[in-house]
Image (tube, rainbow, N blue to C red; front, side, top):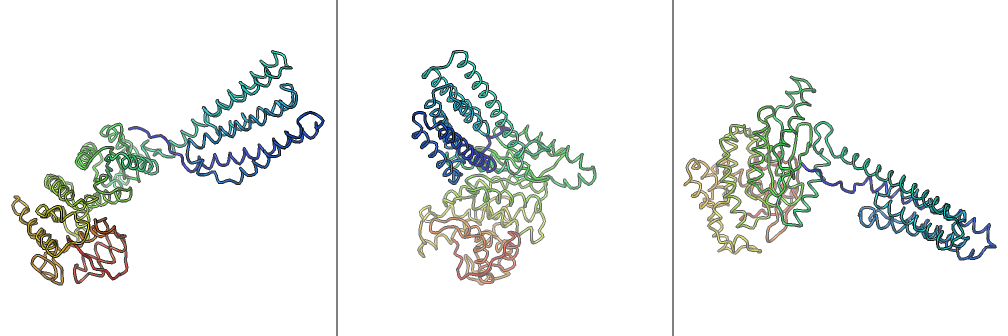
Amino acid sequence: MTTPPLTEDHTHVRFRLRNVQAGAAISTVAASAFLVYELQTWDRPHRSLVAVLYALTVICSAILWRLNLEPVMRRRALRETFFLSWSAIIVALVSIGPITDGGARSPLIAGLFLPLAFAALSYPLASMLAVGAMVVGAYLAIALGMGGVETPEVCFMSLALACATWMCASQARNHDLQRHELGRVSRSDPLTGCLNRRGFEERFAAELSRAGRTGGMLAIVLLDLDDFKRVNDEHGHAFGDELLRWVVETMGAVVRPSDAIGRLGGDEFAVLALGAGSAEATLLAERLADALAARAPVSFGVSTYPQDGIDRDALHQQADLALYVVKHGRSTAARDTGARELSWAAALARAVDVRMSAAHGHSGAVADLAARIGVALGWGPERVARLRLAAMLHDVGKIAVPEAILRKPARLTEDEMAIVRTHPDAGAEIAARIEGMEAIAPWIRHSHEHVDGSGYPAGLRGEDIPLESRILLVADAFDAMTSDRAYRGAMPVADALAELRLCAGQQFDPHCVELLTRALGERAGARDHVVELA
């Protein structure tokens, strides 16, 4: 596993902002002291010009104190340019004093130590060395350019400034190392050494942004240890801690060096698989489950960018839904026996989604939602698995619908809708021709029937519609409403649930709507809209 570079977090930004305020205060005090010296030696040349410069320095420092520099501090390149420019200005202002006061023998030459002291507060090593070079260069330019000092004095003062630079640079290096270590600790799980939730989410956000810019793929695999509480109860927390360390070590041997492992909770882990599509991510999840099976059996859920979502929340939700179904709705045996069917069903569903130009995995999302309703009904693993398979294939009949209709960016005409309404029959025919899939064919055929008899293809009513078909209709409607379509944008979840409740008893089975609402943990009020599905 690789450790990503640390991001510029809020703590470090605030730290640098405080140093700006400290620097403004130091500049004000130093400029005031220089100004007092100039006033006390007013009989010497150039005093009025220098006094004006130091007075302006005091004013500018006060203004700097009040400026909102947070946007600058959040961008590393701008921030370091700002601090180096500021230091260069300070070195120049400090140098003006000795130049007008007789050269390197002036007591004002000691002011050259001030930029070094300020830089040591927070500058990174490279910037600190740059400031040191400015200071030593300024002193040599004054001493050699104006003369008046012996070579031993020049060497001694140059060496003193160089030593001060070296000590400040060492401190800057220590600050960098300390900040890096604190950042690593704040983003790592202290028990297992993998990323903690904060670190994983930051890495997830960074890789998601990169994938969006480059058009790449990425997947998230969520894993939850089965019965981990029982392990702690029976063997003690020390044994449980050792097991968690073994889990991360074992996972690290399975994933690629570019992948990231995170511990999101007590017994919940996640893997970020860079460049992985759905098939690769599922294979990785199965390999992880096989590797951990000996000591720590796991349930897993997978989602991929951009098929299942384009932001972190959507991808987490899809993976959570898949994990929920595996953990609470299907046994390990059921998952193993249905893996082949789900694999080809997922491939077929993805082909349909591509033809529909779906922005996410619509068929897979409907399958996850339908499975949640099945679990809420108390169905056993086998029945939930068959429901999930039917949901995955509910739109397979659209293979026979022309793409021009499926991708039309406007509402369909009556003739076009008549063609679309043939897809449930076509899908049922496809499923019926596959050995072992005969039982789900009627569920697909009647997945667009309405409980009031206004649906298609047979106009069935109420209990005459298979319960599985009623579930598919609710799951399909919810995902359709909460996804972007060519002719409209996505609807908020609360509004979509309100639509389902509004149409319950007409289009939708009220009990299925209520179960989905509970499963999603949402409550929505009613609004006056009609749900339209193709």
